[in-house]
Image (cartoon, rainbow, N blue to C red; front, side, top):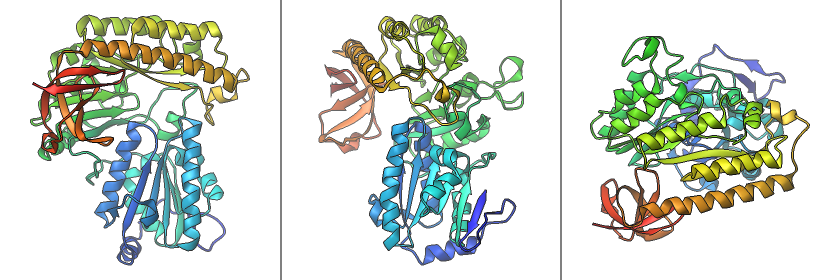
Length: 475
């Protein structure tokens, strides 16, 4: 961690110094104690933001929906796409200007852009008080203590993520994220995640189950187990323990069996899977365990083997197809979603058409698509065979058109069926509707103005189908 005092000209390393808690609490006593968090990016970032909100509320802050009313503004950032990164700078610029007239404002950048840029971010935006990577989320209070002692702080060194005893401030009272593994050990040539989120670190099964039991006691009905590469869960843990599989190592499948019987939890999901490690045992567990939802999210990224090799994905499109075939053999109605990248460096028209062919033949319920975006420090970013923005745009539009067609076709199977929907809240676009999701993760609306249904599982007959959502009536 680098701490730059207000006056000295050189950064001071304070790795082993205890944080000045008195400065933190004294500062909070003098402030209105309002915070505002803006979250960019993936589910992991959303979970991190909830934990940071919990830390802030534990030390006396309270939330505000208005960034301009906040005494502390925190941007939890994503660097997986360039447009997300640029959006952060746009938001940050507005608050940096505000700080000129309100010097008491505390500005924090957390997450992947913070980890990627480090001190360079502080030099680019000198109004910043704290730059912190994802591995320091649980230490937010300690880092703020250094800030309120008069320092600018950069915390991006690799660190072991301690179990967080602070309760997250969750955005829902019905569904909750539960981290099971942090970081990623893969070396995909386009991806910046391993360098900004660090090496894989699995939480212990006991810690995960304890968090799920606490959520059940608070009335939560659904949990989603999270990991950048969730199939890698357990391979860094010592052998032995609950449900240890072949070789004594605990796997994601073992974990699912271990947490499945937590009373009060009605649905369990998990994401994101990697085709290299996806197992038939996992599919059988999902078919056998009634709380496991019939939905798999398995990115394929490209339908061309040469590109998959260049991406260092570690599988072929044939292996990916075998995974999907096995899922549909064992669980025919399971929803399958994926991620895909178009216009990766060197991608030919024929290779892109291989991706279209895979998408057309598999027929996904949803595919998250993106045009390749060079990320600093990744191998592919410096390759000379980058494609033009025109090619990227054209291929992305063509893929999206096919994905939308397939999603509409896949939705047709729901028409007239009865589905169990966990009602999660009011439709923000229509207060006369409540909304939830099927077990297969389709957003579903109910034309009833009954907030008392929130948190309940209701049975609907589906009367309307759209590519990515449904509408039903209660039976």
